Image (cartoon, rainbow, N blue to C red):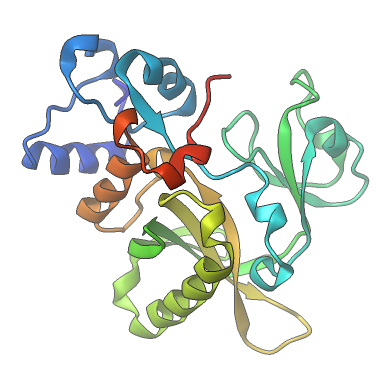
Length: 253
């Protein structure tokens, strides 16, 4: 882990220590330390992966854009920052894999940061409203653990299992998602879903918010033990990577 830790890092460090694993700051690690796993940012992770022999699994940049609208509930397309600069209407813009600029609704492309590589990949999304958003840690296509993390865009964590009805709806939605789009995801990954409000339809429907790397995702109120299970698969020794996960191994920039 990085030397400067977040609350999720502290939770995972405590769980790993309880399993007899050594938890070290990235600056303390030596190549002879033995099999290594990673939880932290993509830049440091990519730098250390070759040195320490771990592989970082991540979803494809355009995975969300390739999903049928049945699962996204909105128009999403993969583009570049140069394309985003040319946008003339309010659009939700985010970098798919890192935090090179804030993911947010931008009134138009002129509001986006300048000075970045125009070829930077981005996702452009129609602006919608999510009543509630949930983070799901998936392992082999099943929900290992999860947590609500926001209500109408405001941080409000709550364990997924506190509401059986919602958990059941989410499980049903994820089962359909995995059946149709599961092979396009690594075996250990984070998928965020939400209750999408539609002014033209009563109630709500479930939609995918985004997919993320498990080794760089906040746990919120999810079970740390189950989160760690997913992280260990998503960022562990390269020789233990399952054949079906090889296309999802992050390559050095």
